[in-house]
Length: 198
Image (cartoon, rainbow, N blue to C red; front, side, top):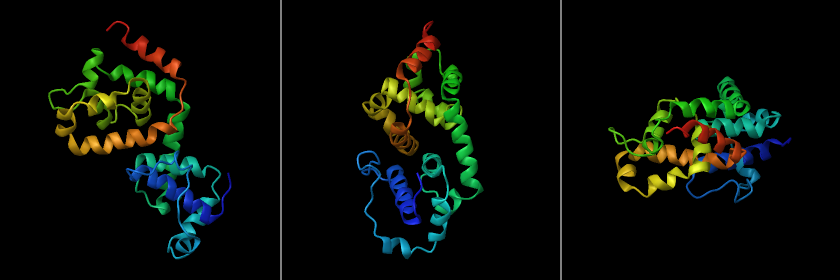
């Protein structure tokens, strides 16, 4: 979907606000943000939005970058840094079920232990994510299937013990999950196969 630079700026702002704000929801507001053209015209970096507007993959490029680094500057998005993030993101999209199947093998064989505080008070699943052994997509798929964040939030001792890590990670999962489209039954079957002997 081609946009002019001002529209590209609004789209960038909508996705950035979605990932950084506690109240704004990209889907609820249909990607609309209230910003005047004159505000855009006053920006020193508006040339970057000219470059961004020319990208055929603009939405996915911004989404990939914001899901990894929510406060990423537009100049980095249209540069090599953004392209690198986008290529890695695209690779994960193309191999989502394959990655999910392999990443859940790293989970503890005792299913419930993955979601309960371990010796360091961090649930094992969260620890895997922090160590980058499990991707954001897998965290979101598991959340869609299991609603494990609800379990964590019902246990104040978990939230309290991992304060900062918890806030940043859970916010990222909640904000990114609606963008992750899956065949739920397919992923349920993969999860069931992984833990059927547990």
